[in-house]
Structures are given as structure tokens and as C-alpha cells.
Image (cartoon, rainbow, N blue to C red):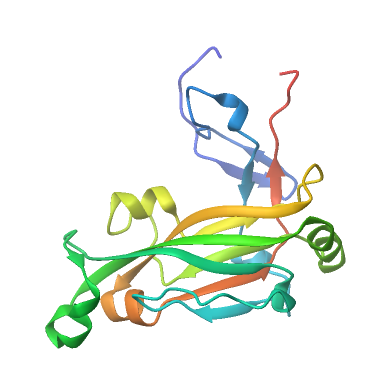
Length: 199
């Protein structure tokens, strides 16, 4: 690298990406498998399944026949915009749900690899898991900017099973973000960059 100039990622043509991306973790680059780029316009029609993800339960275990994957919640943490934690007993306090807030959802996404690969090929792309509502940019919390609101589930040829552990954030008006949040799975056409082992 001859320069540390940072150029925002852009797509000058539909089949080309250019710019600077940050890959981590810094200590072990072997964990870096790629970078994906996604646009809501790239969702595949007729492939979306949406599930309620209300505090304090999150997403109830889903049926694998809906999307070829199952999703279940492993953790739910809710906060007001100022970072104050909200506990389940607050559900009885109307004043607890005023203003903005955010929720961190731990999700476990599983499926049979062969079925998922076949479904992805037939569908025209892999599944994206999306949490809503969300806010652009840095959002309400550093945790939300780290966790994000989406994860791409890529077929993995070397594994017999799909096993993804993800943490996603819903944020915004506190009732929408905590009590009326949704987790959706949607087929997508995704541009994927993978690290060149020779480069």
C-alpha cells in the first residue's frame, strides 16, 4: 500500500466496486472471508418471510419450511437512547416507553447446507437476515453501529450445515424498536468480494 488515503466505497458500474473497506480482526486475517454489498432494491420478489421480534422474547423459533433456514433468539437486551437498560418488569410502566431506544438481538441461524445451496441457486441468491426498524449512519448507540441491522447468509461448500451466530440491532422510536420490531429473511442478489489468497 502506497497511501493511507481513504476513499469511500462506490460502484462506478453495476459490476465493479471501488474504494476503501476495513477488514478485521486485525490480529487474525485468516478469519476474513469477504465483504458483501447489499441494496434493498436487490431483494428477490416473493422470497421474504417476516417474524415479530418483540422485547423481551425476540424471535420465536421459525419453521425451516418458510425459508430453508431456522432462526431463534439467543439473547435480547433493550436500552433507552441514553444507554439506560430496560428490564422486563418495565413492560408494566407506560412511562418506560417514551422517546427513542434500541434493542440488541442475538440470533442463531441454522439449516442444512445442501438444501440451502440448492434453494439459493433456485431462488437466484442467498438469504439476507434483516432487523427493523433501524436508523442510518451511526444510529443511537455504538453497539448498533458495530452490530448493524443485517447479515448475509452465504452457502458454504465445505460444511454440511449452515450455522451462523449473529447480533443485530433494532433502533428508533422506542415502541417501534422494542415492542414492534421485526426480523425478516429475504432472498437477495448480492455482490461479494472475497480475499485473494495470492494477493
